[in-house]
Image 1 (cartoon, rainbow, N blue to C red):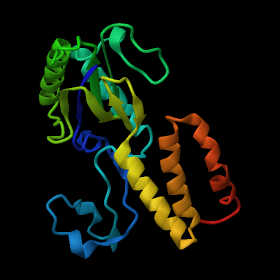
Image 2: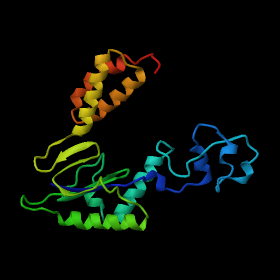
Image 3: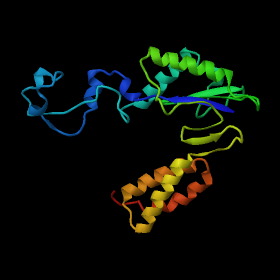
Image 4: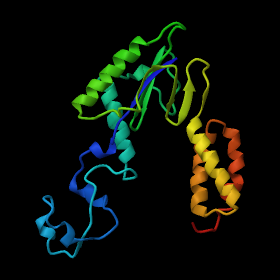
Length: 231
């Protein structure tokens, strides 16, 4: 099994939004008007205000339905340029495609894979379909991250997993797992931990233990000690 894929750079910030959505995406600190009134884009009708707030004129991660907009638009581009099609689409809740080629998208991560013979070095569909996706990115003025892409490799890290196309082994990302274990060991050596930090650590292990569901039971005490306590 060979893999190719790309990660879009600054995907959320490439969207254009209207004034109503932008006004919701304000940064929660007051800026003295005198510091920014001379900016070229400063609205003249706000000159009389003592303070102003900056707003993101794009999709903001965590904003209402932002992930849905990003996911749907990225998938639509892939379908339009034939980088993906309905028969080969790999989804969260559907069965895996039965053909030799499959692929999918999670927000800004585009990944395709192809079953090939043991002596094959490249997948013909991987070359063609990734080229189609790159052409679509160019038309939409989007850019794939220059260092996060991979092309016709037999082992790859994507969607939070490490997948070995030769052995067929799928497991959690080793780098993230090692970092998480190191941080956990440091906290354990201190003997104290805030509730907020415990929530972060628990979230990291939930993502990792999704590959070994029975290990989720180890987190029961982690959540039990958080009950009734402030962060």
